[in-house]
Image (cartoon, rainbow over all chains, first blue to last red; front, side):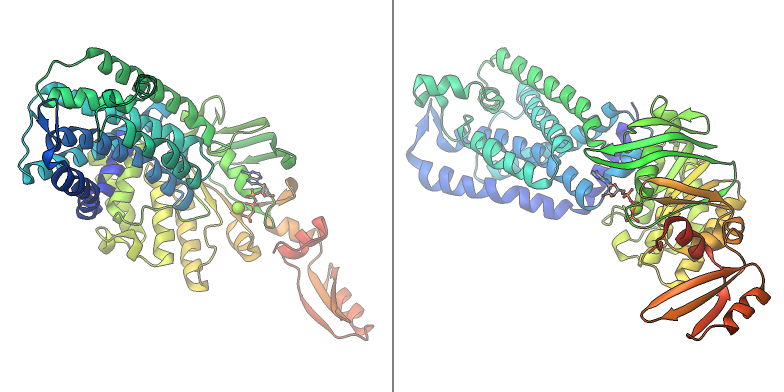
Length: 245
Length: 278
Ligand SMILES: Nc1ncnc2c1ncn2[C@@H]1O[C@H](COP(=O)(O)OP(=O)(O)OP(=O)(O)O)[C@@H](O)[C@H]1O
Ligand SMILES: [Mg+2]
């Protein structure tokens, strides 16, 4: 099991090499969303007694932590198909679970970094919500766990990086917009709400938002996230063997 | 040390390894020689746990590569055909990751890193990013990385491809040094002179089949000692002779132009498979 540390250590060293670049690139899109939707368009909008900016930031936290956790999949693909680093892991006496755990934690760490950046940007725009609420962080953790595990599993199954990019395009990006990030799901027709509640991100944004407004959280969302994350994680452990030809 | 019995690998419709059986002895330098696509890399990948075997068995130091994978992996280090280093990270970091993957404690890791960079003259590059090293240094780094956990067996897949002649010689010297320290070396190559210079025994592999295993000298003398290459139209035909006298006699009767030389491993390969290695 302790082989996971080698995998995680490598991810952290790479993160350190690219730290400033990564921080900058993590800040760009949330910053633009905050300006365009939060500041310019959302001035006169209030939702359930909160300014649109206050509504938007938890949504961005959910979206960013999902995106950044999922990017670990691309990192794995690049090091697998382009640098052949994955062979080093395959030839090492480490179990599949160690490998998946190390990479998943790598994804989660990136997700937390991106959340830190959004909180910083929010403060810049003068928004302070309840970041001290532990349930806020639990939801962030579970959300990044779900998407990091998913990304690692996908990376083991795909035959090229293009496959993973396709999944991002057709699944991750639509979810980022529909999963309760930019508007309350309750504004959609009931049938659409039912579909959207099947998306893990919807539960994450609801939970993160409720916690950051100091509202009571819905434990059901946490259970869904934890369950989905565990299933994705176990699948990822199973499919590491698929990368063996 | 390395035992392979009737190993087969099938990818879809292509039968890549056909009943390969080999026995590499402890401390031996063993070369696996064959043309492109012969199945050299596939064999190494199976032995090191990267590729599944289709049938047959293989053991490293007594551990079965499929049934005792983790233990088998601990026996060996691998230098892959393509240089697979983290180029953004430093020499030290690349070696550290490998040490961690093999569960080496901190103190041992540091000591071993210092020892190894000294061994190949990389000490002053310890904190340099790998992307800034030359091709020869990168190759040396992949070799010492594979040695980090002091494996009993070292696999090298075409370790000198793409390197110039003088660097190739340095790598050869390094391999001899490693062998002298008691490590069993299994290397693949399609350079005849590499196998001839380094290996105690050579296996010829062609289209997934091992066609001969012996010492370079024995393989060569199966052909004879001397060769005459006859230039006929746009073709070269070689004839082999036991003694210099026989060869001379034959040469005197020829009208075409010819050249006279010693038999080498290439001749042995050619006559066993009907093709050149390269
Ligand atoms: N993943 C794969 N799927 C299908 N065929 C494969 C796969 N990997 C290798 N092969 C085939 O197996 C054969 C042997 O390949 P291998 O890489 O072992 O040859 P090699 O002796 O190492 O050649 P080279 O000198 O070019 O490195 C080739 O015909 C190759 O096309
Ligand atoms: Mg090869």
